[in-house]
Image 1 (cartoon, rainbow, N blue to C red):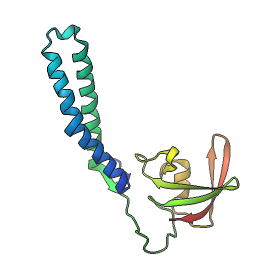
Image 2 (tube, helix red, strand yellow; image 1 turned 120 degrees about the vertical axis):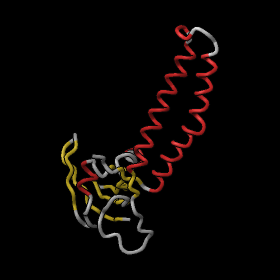
Image 3 (tube, rainbow, N blue to C red; image 1 turned 90 degrees about the vertical axis):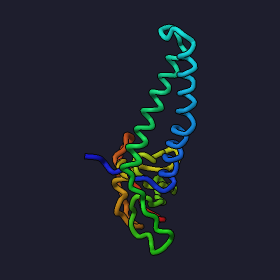
Length: 156
């Protein structure tokens, strides 16, 4: 059984871009390096051949991983500003009040999560507790430093 991979349109475009870069550019370049290194003779002592072959193996693995992801992708639907944003769902950008300050997060699928960019996974403790909530509601999340209370201020 495969798990659905949730991505925004931007996240899907980024995965496709990486796949194209690997298949159209990087893989052919590394294949050429393997071929050239093979022509240098004794493969058992040929460091360039070993390095190029290892890089090719890594690229092929990443291409396979990306192709698997792309088969399982479900794109997060956008509201395009139509209708009120009343409930937090995948793709929502949420303004939270925590410890006297406001923080803004976007709830995304796990493959796009990037805490440094304030993109949190829908499967993270905070992401799970936010899903389905409305403006004005509070959620409490267990963190390594203790329980943290968040109040939902805005949903976009």
